[in-house]
Amino acid sequence: MGSQGSTGSLGSPESTVPAGAPRVQHQITVPDDVPMVVLLGRRDEVLRAIEHGFPRVDVHARGNVITLTGPVGEVALAERLVDELATIAATGQALSADAVERAIAMLTAVTQERPAQVLTMNILSSRGRTIRPKTVGQRDYVEAIDRNTIVFGIGPAGTGKTYLAMAKAVQALQAKQVNRIVLTRPAVEAGERLGFLPGTLSDKIDPYLRPLYDALHDMVDPESIPRLMAAGTIEVAPLAYMRGRTLNDAFIVLDEAQNTSAEQMKMFLTRLGFGSKIVVTGDVTQVDLPAGTSSGLRVVQEILTGLDDVAFCRLTSADVVRHRLVGEIIDAYGRWDAHQRAGGVTAAGRGEPRATAAPWREARTTSRATEGRERP
Image 1 (cartoon, rainbow, N blue to C red):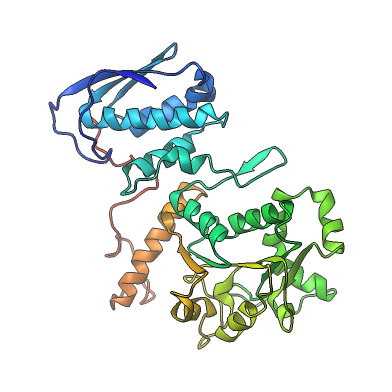
Image 2: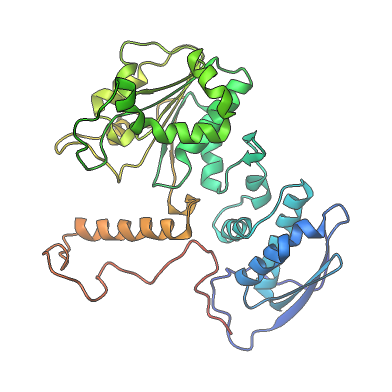
């Protein structure tokens, strides 16, 4: 991509630029094979996201030339962003404001990863949409699944642990790397007693397995799912049904593994047969086991870490791909937990109303890489 003008050393977009800092103008000529309508986004959505990400940089597009004017470091970083977005657009992939935010986060993080390499890694295309990792952490998780026989995906809600694992399972089935997919999770109630559930055994356990069915419908033609399940090509079952089995030539996903006991985890992992792969997912901060029962997902990290062909991938709030607030909520709970472990006592803990900010609260953070910058 051609460019004109001077660039300075790169700076973080969150850094405060001193008043009167030198400003530069830089022109970027977009190659002819990159459609400007794709690069700028529908109704200039991408262009506005770039402006939002770099409020100190004036961004103007005319023809196939994009002009950036602003502080030296930020113009240089914005130019890198445009270059990465153009590389993505050249593949024919649509761009969005979310992609811009994630690209900025990667460019400002302490990593050598290029956003274009992460955001164009396709796992599975189904029903007109493509499933791909959206963060460096998710990309590393997907690559770990390719390289290892057993992979543990550990992280908070919304980081795509189970969804990406199931996408890899469907991909492996379509490529005939395995003969069947086995999806399982423990039938543990999430902190509440549901009591007696009416119906057949299938009716009783289906509510616990519903999230797996939902993800499956995103990836496989819904009309073919009953046929595949009847043939045993896809099996969705509670963890208790795994005992006594040996699973050969299968891609096995254990979801909600934080709700397994240490004994159940050992039982599950030893179901591994020849030509099979296991992915275990869970969030150790959301354990619903009875008091006094150790989470198998916590214990297994102490037992299997360092074992060859076994990988532990830890995702964080930076890998959350749900609503922006989900990442902030996860971080807030993390700070609260740390405060509790340090022996802090809150008004809420004493059963008293709290009208003021709690001591563990920090300045509001956001997954948007550039919010919080001082505007001119």
